Image (cartoon, rainbow, N blue to C red; front, top):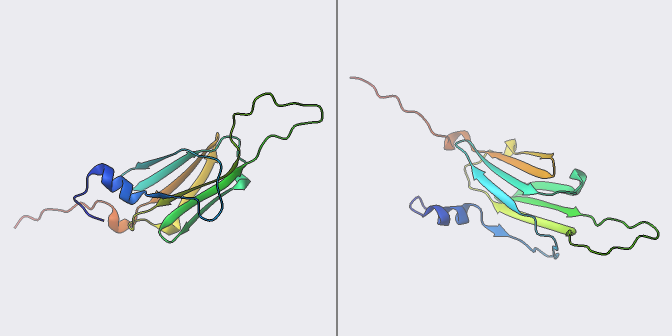
Amino acid sequence: MTTQATPLARLNELFEETGFFGERTRTFTPLDIVETSGTYRISLDVPGVDPADVQVEYKEGRLWISGERRPDVLEEGEKRHRGERPHGRFRRVVALPEDVATDQIDASYAAGVLSVVVPKAEAALPQKITVRVE
């Protein structure tokens, strides 16, 4: 990573998205990435997705988030007049910087939002330097 990159270039470098690895995904799942002084927080909208159908993995310097939004099953005699809500498999891949504590990644699900918190490694956190008086 270069330290003189523009903020946008740095974000693109840190959080490069890749996808469509082998199988085709049909559902776009929007996400937000927020950096704080001690963490990176990734939030995905996954309304209607059973948390059991969501997988979060860290491998090869990337956070892999995948799952499936299943279609509604129609009952006998029901007829769908409009079907705009997307369904199918989704996958988002977020490249992480090297300064993260991968053993402390935490994922939670509430109100249709998946939140993944990736703490920065202790060495990457700002350190206060005390000025000595001589």
